[in-house]
Length: 298
Image 1 (tube, helix red, strand yellow):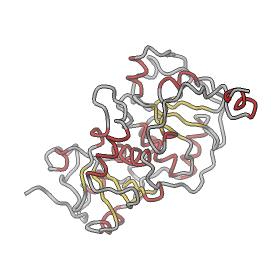
Image 2 (cartoon, one colour):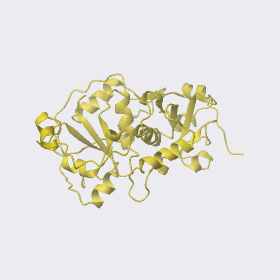
Image 3 (tube, one colour):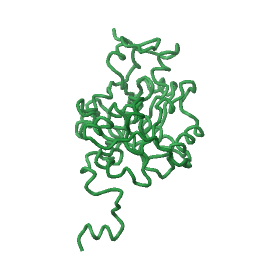
Image 4 (cartoon, one colour):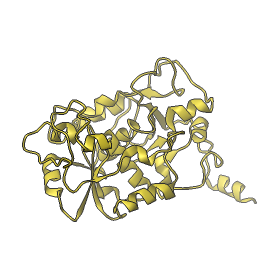
C-alpha cells in the first residue's frame, strides 16, 4: 500500500486540505499563514471562514464566500485603558460572521496584512488561535486571476465563546513601567517621520517612547508582492534589532494595526505568544495625554 493510500485509509488526509496546496514549511508557525493556492482549494470547506478586512471594494468584488468586517469594529477609542471591545461585543461580532470556536479563520486585506493582522491578534487575545493571514492578500489573489464574486454572503450565525487567550494587551501604565526595563523589548512599528515627530497624523504630540526599538512593519514585507518576506529575512530583521525568541515584547504604533503585524511575524518565527503584547491605546493615546513621557530627536 502506498504512503498516500495509507494516509487516506487512516484519515490523515482530507479533501479540504490538498497535500499539494501548501508550500514546504518556511516558518516555525506555518499554520499562521496560507497561500492563495490553498485558499482557492478550500473556499467551500465546511469549517473555513474567509474574512475580508479591506476598508473598501467588497461590493465590487471579493473572494467567493468571504464576509466583510470593518477594521474599526475591533478597537474602541473610547474604552481606555485597553481600548478593547468587551468580551460580549466581540463574541457577538464573531457570531454574526459565522465564526465559532472551531472555525478556521483566514483573513486578508489589500495592504499586505495591515488590517488583517489586527484581527489575528484580537482573536488570539480572546482565545481563538485557529486563524491565519492570506499571504499576499487581495493583490496576489487578483494578480493570479483567482475567482471573485459580488454576492453578499449571509452566514449562519454561530456561537463564539470568549476564552483565555495567548497574546496580551498592554496599557499606558504597562508602557511606563517598561521604559528602560531590560526585561522588556519595546518595539515601535511606525514610520521614521512619526518617530522623529515630523508626521503627527492628527496627534497632539510627536516623538517616541524612550528605550523603544524601531521595527517598521513594511520592512517585513516584500515591496512588490505585498507578501511577507522569507523566514530567514524576517528572522534576520528581528535578531538584528536585538529581539531574541524568548524576550518579553510590547509593540506600539498609532492604533494597533502595524503593531499587530510586527507581533504576527514574531509568532511566525515561533515566539511564545504569551510573551507578546500590543499597546492597543497606542500613540493615539500616548501622544494625546499630558502625563506620558515622550522623547524627541535633538
